[in-house]
Amino acid sequence: MKPRSILDLGKRVHLIDGYDWDLPERTGTYVIAEEQLTLIETGPSPSVPYIREGLSALSFSTDQVKYIILTHIHLDHAGGAGLLLQECPNATIVVHPKAARHLIDPSRLIAGAKAVYGEKFDELFDPIIPVPQERVLIRADGETLAIGPSCTLEFLDTPGHANHHFSIYDPISNGMFTGDTGGVYYSPLKREGMDFFLPSTSPNQFDPEATLRSISRYRERQLDRLYFGHFGMTLEVEEAYRQVAEWLPVFVAEGERIWTDGLGHEKLCERLFTLVSDSLISRGLDKNHDIFTIIRVDLSVCAMGIMDYLQKREA
Image (cartoon, rainbow, N blue to C red):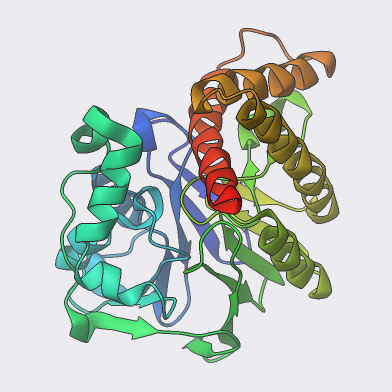
């Protein structure tokens, strides 16, 4: 296992680093140690060995896994579901109603990801294995899932990042697993004394208004914790809401300028990267910090989503 590969987040929740893009602290799998051992997110297929090793380090076997919950089925969160399921004979995949058919037949997922990631697709995501229909459990808005004698998870429909996205409320920690709707948490910066969050605006169903409505649903819960798909947990709940809500219109406005000038997503990525990096450097972050590598990757995909959103809006 690589350094910092398992984080103990308290409240019987651990996070196994999946090393997506071979980068630490980018994506991971949450482990909820309840009577029904529950995982949230699988990451892509190359992350599955880290999940297996992480479970073993936590003294769990793959046979013990009962539920694998996917906030949404973008491949960086769920591409490894079919592969992991082969190693978890007693597990069921839990997904949003709009997601199930794409797990059972992932052909459209694969095509969409190839359009975004091009020649890097195989390296990042292969293999994508279909999930048997009989091992898929659907949970809609307001529905629940008991995973222990004193723990019943609740599911909230939270579009904005994707139409097939739900978030999972955990009553034991009074926390919400937000997938990508709640934004991206750059948790390595916590070690620099910074809490830094950005919206996640990747293609092809990004909707800024829906994102803000979903965040309002989080606020209504008066949560103590947010668990992010990228990456980790924060107790600074209101700060996370504030930063995502502030950056979101900036991202869209910059996209509108690029769109008006007839330029592409590459130019938008560069513009967003300049704004974000200038903001962090003004707060005292070294301009050569490793986090900028991850931020650039994220903003490249975010820029594609914003331009896709604007194209659809103009159509």
